Image 1 (tube, helix red, strand yellow):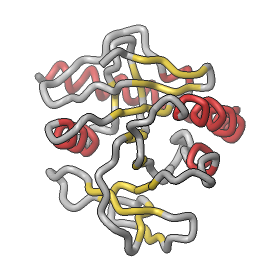
Image 2 (image 1 turned 90 degrees about the vertical axis):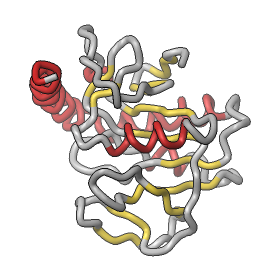
Image 3 (image 1 turned 180 degrees about the vertical axis):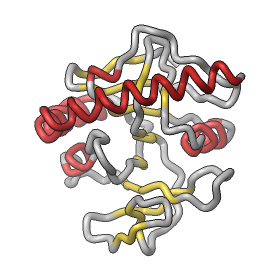
Length: 194
């Protein structure tokens, strides 16, 4: 287990640097390009009524253009909220005029908002591999949340990444790690068949 944690720590450093470079060079353009891919892809996903996305921090791919591309739709949107260090995330409904505050974890969350259960979770990541393994920041928030939601209903999990975050090596997996179903990069969608 110690070797898995060290491998993940080392991979996080490498991928964080790659993501920072890609973000500086292409960040805004990539998010806008992805929004068109996303809008087209979502037309085939009739089971998706509620989408959870994240408010970007640092060099994360910005999902806001994806959400803005759907403003005329009847879909509902929500943002994740941390309620404890070992607990799954909850999701509060988001509107474009929602009042947001900075949480104790440094992310923007709605002040108010109905609690929703998403059908699609858009998640940030540091790396992904050809099997759909996602390397996050190490807190396990998304893994706990995805596992809890999957025990209750069918959900889709979509990772947003720059193509440079793809790793040819297999990301070492712990028993609690959850796979993503799809990834969206500037080259388009890839399904992992889960």
